[in-house]
Length: 307
Figure 1 (cartoon, one colour):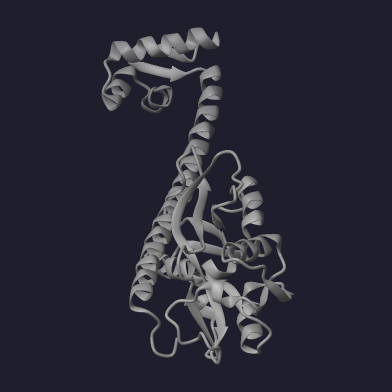
Figure 2 (figure 1 turned 120 degrees about the horizontal axis):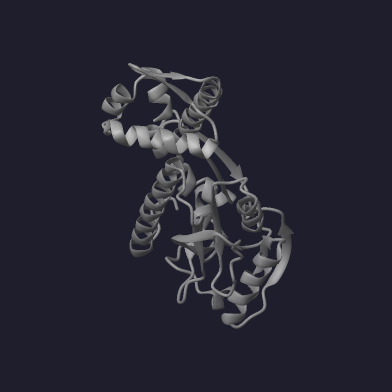
């Protein structure tokens, strides 16, 4: 209001511009002068004119308004899908499947939005989300695990990732629709070296009545198909990792109670997320639903020729 009075040099014209009464504008200006303890306008027979204190105040008001306009534009840019950015972290198997599908769909709709994709394991993702180095993280947990989640984070279930048995194509059970773990007694196993992989394999085999004989531990799940194909041992592998399989191995579901891990999307809770992040989260949920439907059909119909 002060800026409009100064610009027009008239209480009446400023009131008309702002759709106020002249009396209301006059009262506001008088209240401002009392608050600042200075006369801001010289009252003239026809209009008003800024005093020295009024001119000083106007220069500050103009800078404040300019900074506000810049701040508003920055906020709009951040919250706009078209000009936003999404920093997404996920474990390798998710990156190669659900995340890849979601990112491709997102880019086709929002080609000007920057997407940063990082490979991170679940424990690492929690820390990166906590310090706001990621906007979204894809993580997972097995039923017996308590998934760590920093304060202020929301976990949205995406899909259940069922574990399978990885076999050489020449294995006697390679032609089966499903594999009973109880029939795998005496097999040598390969697994990842981390504690979580050890616990999952041991727990699944103990439930089937035997202790697994581990022939070799490796650094990454992507190493398992090659080791299995070479005859080092059979393995448990996630459904999401099946995309990286070789032609000389087969993957079969576990008969009976499945061994599954729940895959989640982790996002900030509380304050509204940027629209680019919300849009990516929707794409991830849709890609996960499509993946689960495909997996269900595969389990019902059995392996396809060449699987």
